[in-house]
Amino acid sequence: MNEKDLFPDYQPKKTPDTVFDYLKYPKTNIFKIIDEISQPNLEKLKLILSHFKKYKTEADRNPGSFQKGNIAIGADSDQYYPSEEEIFVSELGKMLKNIVESYSKREIEQFKLKEGVQSQKIKFSEILFRHVDVMGSGRYFYADKTKDIIHFEL
Image 1 (tube, rainbow, N blue to C red):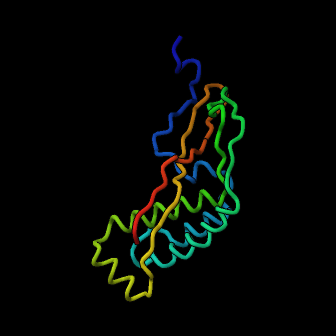
Image 2: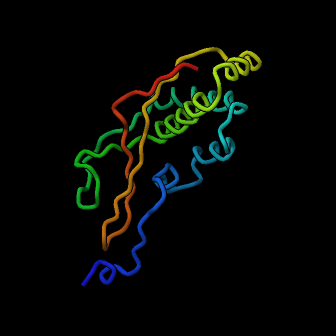
Image 3: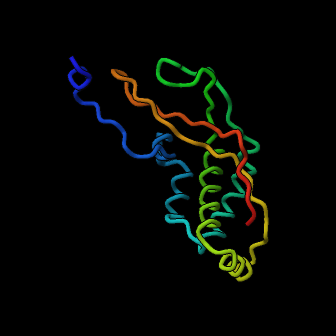
């Protein structure tokens, strides 16, 4: 007997794991603002930066925590559970990093001058997402906080 016979309805996940998989309730503030931003680009830099600063302060006040994880369903023994604010800072930080990497330094400097955006250091902890398929039980999503702080100049 092979695995297909044991679990005939199993479909492997073939897409990257994202915040949309991890968070179960799409009515959260994160999704409203991500929808508002849509595709991050230089024109949305000021909006993203504004949200980043606001939620960075909130994330510092409300950090996630390690809790005992259920290893039987794929969690780490000490599983990290980020706060919603931490997740949001990570998502916004990744958007900002992508913008900085996608545009020339000259384009960014011109935009900052035009929009009155000060040069600054951006620092955040990235939250990564993963899933585990537990045959006969379901698919579970987990978050991990990277040890290295991402930092770059804007």
